[in-house]
Image (cartoon, rainbow, N blue to C red; front, side):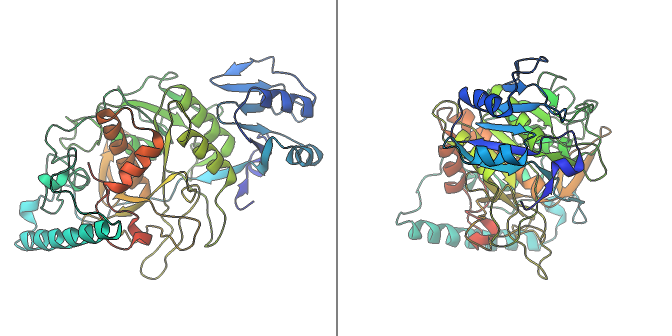
Length: 455
């Protein structure tokens, strides 16, 4: 175990998570036999989660049947016996995850339009264009192919050679990924995206009508409502799907017409925490609701060379490669670096190979000082997204500019929804690769991955 045990934080939490070899109804029966207890009197099933009656510890066992995982308060003997079974991959401790620390942006304000940046703007735009053309040519050469002569579907390259600059109409991030410059782009209509985070501000003029309490927004934290008091979740959700006509006068949402699902998995503490069993319940719920993309800006520490969590890799791989309605998990790479003095490896669960790991770039398309990096053979960076000076919705009906890979990840999640609207037949695995192959190369793949995602 590399993190904090959920049991140490809350004695009412299941101590262990059981990872079965495959999702199957018999998994519930297996646990029932091992624990010598039947299904819970409180209800056989709760949104795809089967419940077993509480034992002497008073803790219910939750079986996440679609994921092939269970959360149970096992004795050491019971855990040992389960590890010996052929249908069990692993038994691991239920851990605590955190929100990556984000900060209010200290950089150039959102209202700094391109015309106000001085005469260097055109020169910089030209130089960036030359750099990006060379990077693209090198990338295609290394793949043994040639760059396309015609722009790809909704390609920003056809209309956006200039440097991404925020204006009063759109944020720099939307311009950078091609959403603001594309001609008649998709809007995400018909695609469901789930955000598992600190909830949402139901009173926000832009976001309050996006979800319905208890239906498309749900809390998985005991005795806490879906209302966001932290601001992180509202900001992330806004980046995914803020409206085209914002109350603040600036468009900031990548996919304004997606069907949003909000799962509150973090508590309301000053430094919010979430336990694996609550996160798993959120993933199960989002999957049951039909989400094709699940955005998770959460992390736990991982040292260079440290393992990725077996739990999240098993869940992500199962969802990614499922034959019917596969699901892509997107996660923030982490904000633990302090460049140039300190560079830190990709954090968990983004280090899992089956989760799309997202690094952050600033408005000059340079790697963000805080963004984590691929430093070993375990935790890759897959792609990058705008993550510095990101303007979006916030609690108390306001707006904030924040810095973090937490801000980059929802840009990718929203863009993935646009891809799915345009090509609804894409599997999650194909979507993963499409985001990478269409990305704009920016430099060192250990920092940027395939590059900045592009429409």
